[in-house]
Image (cartoon, rainbow, N blue to C red):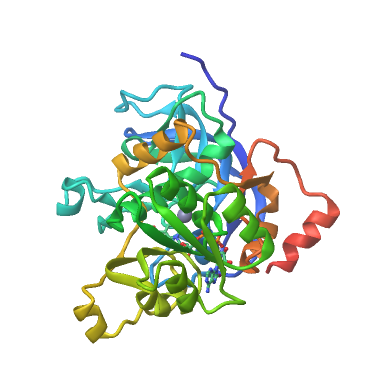
Length: 368
Ligand code: 8ID
Ligand code: ZN
């Protein structure tokens, strides 16, 4: 078993209050409890959830000060005394679910994301925007050693979440699924999982770069630009007038949540995944009843969804775009994300941490 020298201090991105400065600084390395492991995070994805957490725009209490992040892929460097099946040197991942009670009705039914005592990485517990992070061993994702950890990181929230949502959609091979927010982190992965699962896809987002990626690289048959086109009419036109069999709502905007039932086919399913602050989903009761529509929420995935999502990736079926930056660049990533300017995911390399240079320090201050 290889031994790793674990430092006492490490680099992290920390904020003390919602919307306040994000400080890139050195903090102590955490110690794992008896049923936990310590992971040397090599890469962490930046999910829009992390931006919601920094802003504090959800009705859900969080830890402060906080190290955000919940898509961390790395190497196990310490294991608690009760952990038997994970060894030092293994590759493992940290996802949104950091632990759950294991005893409630939901946990017993493998529905641990809705456990009321769930601990959330980068929200109620420090997450992956640091070089060393702790996770409950039972909830750590097992990552086969031959898989690249940078491409793996976005699978740990984005991949699992969209794979689960596609399963919840009840779509069958050959059905058409609309992905709104298709050019973003979750959306680009959703197009790839949908393709691998045998679904046809219509991508809804905006801009030439996202249009090109969605149709040329990710398998969408049609791209609908929500800034230029009437989404309801376009989807109906491309589905023979009946609408799509399912809609996966990933956009961080309320409007698509208001429109979705109008272009979902009778008997179809609308799956809410994106979490725009304060948004509501509305649908006419009459049409929901007489068209037998299903509207449901889908929230990350359980441990089996996790391993299945990783397995799709391991079999070479999932290739979504991502850019790699440094952990120190997190505020810049939030700026780009807020403007909708990231096609795919931004992944941060946590191994190249060093004190900030003058111009980088100025940039951090503009975010406060
Ligand atoms: O378990 C869950 N339910 C879960 C898990 C992970 C993430 C939910 N989320 C939530 C996040 O908190 C966030 O609210 O899913 C949402 C999307 O996360 P993301 O994919 O990480 O965000 P992004 O990369 O910024 O992509 C958002 C895309 O939506 C597009 C943007 O152009 C961007 O490409 N978009 C917007 I904003 N408005 C749109 C509209 N009206 C739109 N696309 C279509 N129509
Ligand atoms: Zn996420």
